[in-house]
Length: 246
Image 1: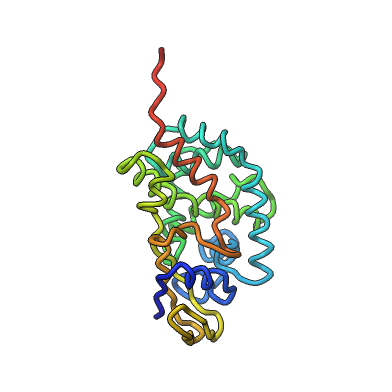
Image 2 (image 1 turned 90 degrees about the vertical axis):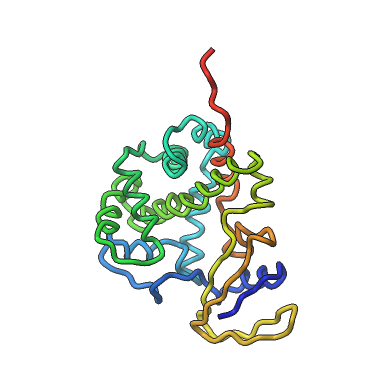
């Protein structure tokens, strides 16, 4: 295992297409459409190369359609715990149908199983969610689900840290970012130039990136999180004091 701590080394690692996000178990195995395995194999996150570029382009286009100010207002006016507020507000801003309690629960189940596991409830949750994504294209539906679940826990953690800390989202991102560590795995043998010298990383080796202390909680390079502005808007709306009736 290799651990990188300097900003320059982490930026170089995040920019290297031969280091991809870790999924447990590896490699990514697909399954029948509508299963958790199929979802993992169909979202942009766990792919690389041309497939990743095509799916990421779709995700970026979806996020670009979202009205950031409207999303902030949705987050301020949505009830529920932090996960629920993130999911309902973001789904609304994406033009999806309103999420009832069952849909929120399904998204949380998928989120909990995103990085591995074979919980049958997750397969059932994926099948329930697909018709709510407003598209007949299974790949697009999978990536809309991916947008929601990838926003879920990280944004909820940002909300909680902001509420418990300074109350300011930007200050929290500087001092207590919710994502402290990223994990990557080499898909080929690498020779990497670091500040401390050259190291060899064999194919399949895990790489730990300590992104929080160096201000890279949203990543860097070709896989930088495209949803930073939306995460900030969601968090700002969620921590706004409620508007009391006159």
